[in-house]
Image (tube, rainbow, N blue to C red; front, side):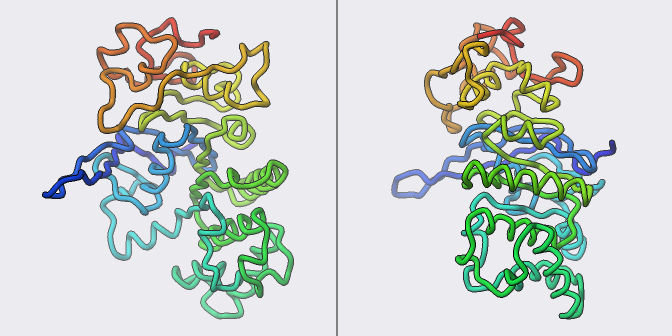
Length: 328
């Protein structure tokens, strides 16, 4: 499988205004030295709790945030250096499905116009008749009724609005879709329907998908590989089924134990982490997870552990070898 996207050493910083007369600001890294690849036709999961930086990674790729460091090579072109016509051409090939389907849709536009908008922007289906036919085909493909094009977003349920968002993303004929927590705001039964739809569309159109979520159990059903992120850094990478069955990093094990339907006596029950995610303004020395890790040792404070191979196809960033694949 050849790489469609290669992210190398991605770093994204934000500034926090400080109180005081002179209006100074303090900068912190929300994403710090993150590297990964997405193959053509691959579904890659990116998981982590709120504040881990996973949404920021997606926004950098799609162009909604500009990183301070690293490279994002899309089909060999560096996204950060593109401008003008080249940027417009590549951006058509990368689309995003947002977490909240209601706030991401213009309430004043009928659904047909919303779905047609990417075609107008990128010069696809030039005639109005072609666009209308394409809109109807896309709405049918995502399971919406024929009259949906004439209605407004508020007339649909949450699951239907997310289908509209997916149809809008497909309208640009992308190669890569960033799916940013696309089912987290939906009921469990509707989640399954949307996940099945994404799986069908991925297979039909040979799409690459970066699927962002906080739920490893959801990711397991859709993704080929999984990246686990904590406080702006990657801590584990591996094939989804293998990673869920045998998590290597202590944080991955804690994340899995937080899924109620997976917490059983045989799996050791719920792992409760002490403390909070460290402040990005004052991150701990060494391993970013060590202040909450039940397996932390003195060596964990000495240096930032790199992602290293810990088994075939498995990478983890951990300073304590005894913590890897341990049973808590």
